[in-house]
Length: 383
Image (cartoon, rainbow, N blue to C red):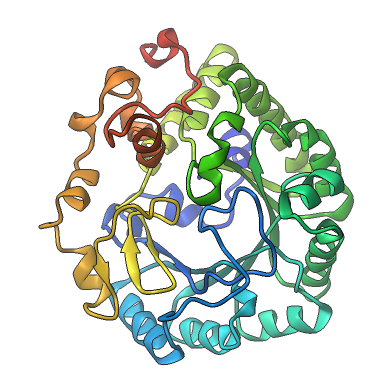
């Protein structure tokens, strides 16, 4: 994640103690763990990375198996446990497990489409001790409902956000950028202001699950640059409202932000560069991990083609520290392996080659350049 508000406005944000401080879990292979707690979902979003459906998979982790995983993560020192899906609110034991994880010392988060959150459910989220709820909106009403393949999804998700705010649940908006919705961004920022939403994360498209069919619907490089210019400008505008804006899944954003700042404020740009170095770029297989609904461990939630082990058979902590797995070991020593544009780039120390899964999807080579990097050849050689 790139915290635009922190970098542009010097305002520390939620989780910045993980993102921008040396010696924290990200430096010690204690990852943020995303748990796709179920593949079941009440929507059928066209870009869903897990290809969710409205039926439950056989073999999903039971309540007891999930508690064993939570015990291990707490002992291991994982800083955050994120309940994702599918739609995690469709798990009947979500609040039991959330409270259990919170009591074990884990910071707990929910990633949801928001359509099921009522006032009563928001109270349950609060009582279970979840520290944050991320609600997905991928456009204004017409575009969002088309993406969700459900009329009324936008209004239900917005109602869910309002219920969270009403019940003092920290909530934020999640938006996956693509050709079909990026023109809605000014309206989304107006919505953030009007509704006083305190946090928004703008995700770059990852070619995974049903999203792999949208590879040609990713932004062109000029469109990506224009979009980042808009997001950076809005981040500065909204900082006065204490609204935190982040971008996700493309660490070229950090380099681009630094290079733009360098033109107008070299001293501030240098401070930003130091924070980006601490962050270190993409953390797949290092500072982030995914456990799917069946217990399989992956490098991140979008990259499910590779599995390191299963928590039903072996503790997560043992799987994550077993570098006899060649991919796991290489992800932690990836810089010399990068090829193409990523191999030539002078910003590998703050980007780490970006998303390896996009390279594999497009080129069939994990170590090739990330096709979503929109930096020019002159820019990657700038430094």
